[in-house]
Length: 344
Image 1 (cartoon, one colour):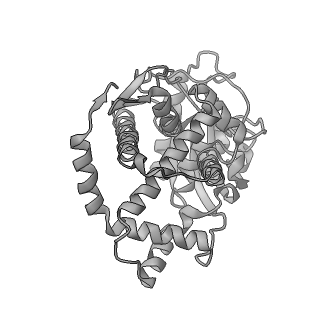
Image 2 (image 1 turned 180 degrees about the vertical axis):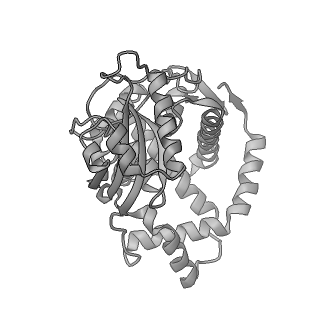
Image 3 (image 1 turned 90 degrees about the vertical axis):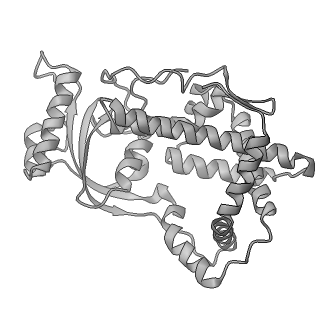
């Protein structure tokens, strides 16, 4: 499947314009998307005779493509470079996964079904704001069944287990190393569906009903000009009152304490990691263009290091760091021996 011009996976049931919600609306025209990377029903690569399908690549790339499409409404060289980088990483991940599976398949390693289910739920939560409907829509769009995706996930977990076994002789993590690693990553372990965001927003519709000669191109140009005015120091709230075309314009574009799950996954992913007071945009949304100023982010709760599963995961991360150079030498030697045929 070729990427749609403005793939945006909305999640909320609200229908206010410009909030990146579940409302179905015309998508602004955009330059043609890169051809090839999201096609399905074909072979992306072969590793020792085992096929990696375009469906698999498509599914892993989909959230990245959606976010990049929103960040770069005009696409352009930066979009192309970032998308190619992401595609290359996904391809390498799938290739290395197959190499390792081949290396260890004679061991008869297995992963319990409930572990696979937990990982699928985690990915659904982090990539799709916990919205199973949107997750299944993306599966359908990529022409993957849930069982097919579970098998991809099972393989990923097998690879993780096999890598851990391969380097089981690594020095044990020290208590201070465990604590330091936990401090560094605990925010990424949080329940992201509990994030709450306060921000200001200026929404410029793709076509202004009050201006019959407006087009998506002229509206994008207008949004870019407004973003420049903000960067030059003009008051965001005043620009919102003058230019924004949504229900929050009279409030200077202020939206307070918005649950992350009420926003589209890619919109949330873009703004939730932005520093407070950072102005972002214009971003492409399903109905037009959005300029955002982050006011405050309240992050969801992170699990405690006292949780056995969390501690085990952190210890594994420390071991992985300690053996990263050793692992790279090992996997590179296997890459050289493998028969790899990349077709995209």
